[in-house]
Image (cartoon, rainbow over all chains, first blue to last red; front, side, top):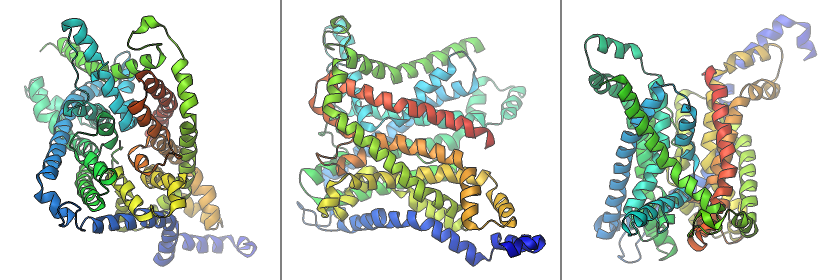
Length: 296
Length: 262
């Protein structure tokens, strides 16, 4: 160091070389910096998950054939797969529709109390699935808001919490904040001159919405929809709180593992579920460019 | 349509959505503070249930805090270097590695937990300790730390600053700790808030990995929802909200802090 400081010009030269080093040296630093994170990932995720994939190919306890094949050939699993996919798609569409309108409105208008509304609509993003399940019970359980209202109006107790409808409401509850945040961000990046141009050409507000705004934020809508779909597919906590008798994939996996110790089946179902959510989230990221779906 | 009417219609629709989000929370908070929810508010307000929850479940709260802090330390120690490594790697490699690290988030927690259980469940001591849950939390939160730090690193023009430091004779270690880390502090802060929030609320992985001696807050919540009276579950939820809402406010604040630079 002292030798270098005597010759500042040479020092600057050699140091610049040190930073714009040979590619090999640069790669070495990157590899060392990444090594701890990758070691944890390989030891505790990739290795166990690879074993899970292999385990899914083992014979299922009840049918005696490979668990992957059993999923495809047994009604029980097929129905639960179809139910889970259907409810997740429905929730995503509903959430994109509802929160799309609200998010667009919030992005475009300024009024007193707006930040409070935004806070109310986005904070539940971080609620764990169990809490969302409990909130559904608060709405539609035996002592829920609907039950009290219907008791007062019609002398009857209306409930929906412990059914697929309750699941739908719960999934909608945690999907809305996701869509709102994405839609608000997308609207802010929208080029408003396009709307003005459309208006000056005589388009009414419905036409502007349909032909300019929706196509403009379509990638964001699709991407957030895919994130909602993936989150709903894997939402174990909500379903677990609302009742373990519902036939959806996360509860099936849990049941096969804890009640029947049918490890091959639990593994196969997890792998199938993981594949579906991974594909959906990859699609979402391709569309949006780098939005990690916040999980439930 | 008259713009005013349209504004009013959209506003009322948005307010309806807000009601849908806030009503169950308000009901739950109220239930946690009333003497008898079945009778209603006229039975009187009380802190009895909150105290009862504290007596029954305070160890779950402490365990959750301990887990979140341990998770934070580990994700900083391995996540900040990882983000730096991604910054210095070739783009194709960086994308592939980021994709890999994201897998524990992209795949449902249930599947990750099952894989961990089937692979390491036979090591009794490890399986029974809180470290087993910590592993799950680290896998799950690491991508959020890496992403937050990396996005700040990319905008901070680090290569330029590092080159300047190197031209003044700083070696790699000096550059990393006096140039790289201070320049991505806002990213570390944003990532840290995210990691703590996610770890405290994590249920899907934790439920599979917990033992009766290692119950976290969300596991205790599920437990109380299933077996306790509504007031206890509500009071417990209230405690959870009191813990999590300041973190969420801080996340929004940190986001606003770093957004003008983007």
